[in-house]
Image 1 (cartoon, rainbow, N blue to C red):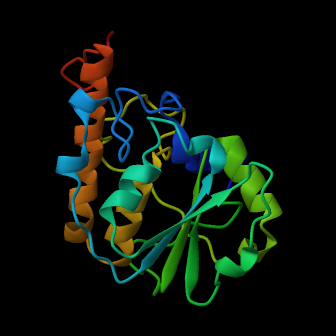
Image 2: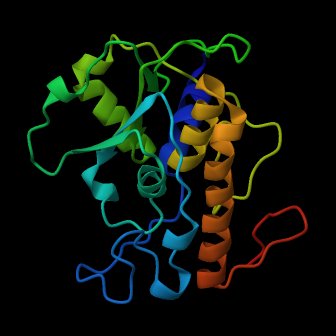
Length: 218
């Protein structure tokens, strides 16, 4: 896989506009972090997967309104969130490689959709392209975990901002596609709906309009 494809698969784990919530959470929901009039908590689905989703989240994502990994964690029942960085030592023993796959692509070939792997858990690196790359480089326990690369969706979904590569996805979107591959598309659909509703509310919050094809025009 060439460097362009590699970067494209990584960039999406956090390509959204970077909006930081105030430290006192004034005017923001303490759970989903969105502005209170646009709170998404009532729309959060309950998604029960057999595969355990382990989100390794860079600490820089903790207070970002645009972080969709948070929405995924709030919606999934079989999920664990491990925060990385901020000067704190990271316990790699929490990353059990048995039966695990990694939603990241360092150089490996994508797994064919026709032959999805059996997985006990899925590790997801949640951060910007550079953050994810640094996390992967430093977390040596992940280097032996087989990598699950996702193909670009046939129809691009509603997104806050178009990624620089067709395979770029937000964390929520990537997890939804992985669940569709590892378990079933029906199980993943509530997460896709949540992604669309999240973008609609962020558009409304920012006064953004779109054309008929869903592209931002203001």
